[in-house]
Length: 261
Image (cartoon, rainbow, N blue to C red; front, side, top):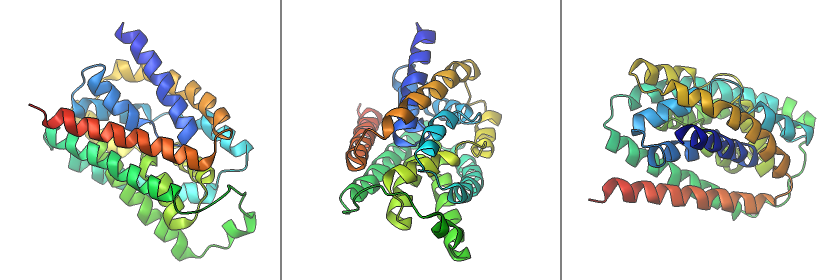
């Protein structure tokens, strides 16, 4: 039964990866904790394990077809994720499980607030960016993006997710990306193993369920293709609202179940 549930869970997470351009950990970690009974550390380490292969490649391909990927910005984000994830993993492993659950819940709620603000910022449409704009950005712009991605990576390493939950709204709020372009660019940073250093911190402490990770990977990959195909059919503002509502609900539930007697 757990095998079937794990396979279905991977497919569901993959669809969310494709729809929202996130790593999937914001849903996977709570699901592993509450559906499969994992400890918080074990759930986060397993979540980071499934991010090592290029599971977002199928979803990225769909965004690429629609011209909603900024490769240069994605590379900047990947560099930031790699460095920040290492620091985040080193911070998270020694923390008590209850503290880590509270941090994870606050991470979800903060990400939701950022995304909700973006949905009401009045940015309309989802136009394709002029390629010349991407090549004329100053060095300071790229350094700022690496710094922001590093901060997202630290948070992601602490809570065991890919970092897209914070990066997607940050690209919109701080760098003027449209929703779909932010999602497609975020997926670029998930293709290389940017979570490797964070994952190694969890693995060395024994916080990885290897067999579950192997079962989850195929579902996340193929689900990402399905989700990516459907993403363009949704209104960008509605997508942000759905995503934000989902994260607020998960974060509040995590806090409630952590503190209830």
